[in-house]
Image (tube, rainbow, N blue to C red; front, side, top):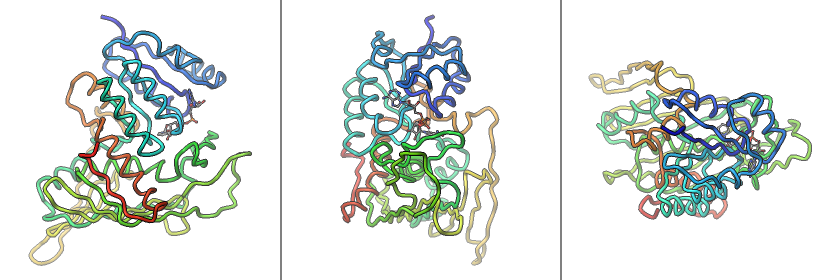
Length: 363
Ligand SMILES: NC(=O)c1ccc[n+]([C@@H]2O[C@H](COP(=O)([O-])OP(=O)(O)OC[C@H]3O[C@@H](n4cnc5c(N)ncnc54)[C@H](O)[C@@H]3O)[C@@H](O)[C@H]2O)c1
């Protein structure tokens, strides 16, 4: 049997993680090709991972005729996700694209159109928290209406730590420049947020009624020549329209660094109960319920499956399962684009000062 072939484009920070995950995939033999338009980065990558086959020219790398199960992982900054994904799909390979999927809704739609035309899978790495015990528990409780009629979700993360997008030991100044990144904290962390909320609620339409964003001013030293024009604090009031016709109000906020207390609240409130959780602390869920007219609470601990893929490994494991035709929680094609468009609608609401609607059936 021929070797499996995986192609990574962009040999920066996150590519390190994907190469390590590839070595854990259930494949006997794999050929990993990597391209980067920075020869120094490519050389350093090859030194760290001698098993990879380096290419300075992505077009030449993808010119090799595709085999049925070849796939590409796009690990470049967001500004090039659309063009590279389209090129990779045109080479007849499935594509797993890093988050955020694109720069705007026009780009995400053209990526989906190309995936449909070439009959290849398009996945997004925003699925890090899908399949997590806490997310799965929430999803099943919502499905079985354990909380009664769900009416409100609060999704709040405010931190005082470093600017969003800054990775220790790296100089990723593209994160601060909207022409390269598409935005700030929402483009960085929002893909995980929206993918998790959407996975739990499975909406068919999301309305962004009102949204705001701000660039908290700081005297932190930026890399020389860096452009800083992205938001570090953003929020939105949204209505989620669910498949059963119900509507859920979602209050969303993300900020780091924000001039406020560090706060995390992930809450789902229903007429017969509520849940609070934090998948980052891996602490589990707190379930509030009616206890003879009083509010009872129960802590449901996080159950870690040592054999399941870990946070950084999940997107690649799930995508690999999908390509092999196995059941998988991967977020693909229309759902991946819908999740991204919900995120982008928050920016569109701020910029246009008008509410926005994103409908799954429009894709
Ligand atoms: N670093 C992380 O922890 C992390 C985590 C999750 C997701 N991501 C996402 O992964 C993507 C990449 O982030 P990163 O942190 O690895 O960035 P990075 O700057 O460390 O690496 C990007 C690499 O892509 C190369 N590159 C840029 N344009 C290219 C092109 N057109 N063709 C070939 N190579 C090109 C650059 O030379 C660079 O080596 C971003 O979308 C980011 O949001 C990063």
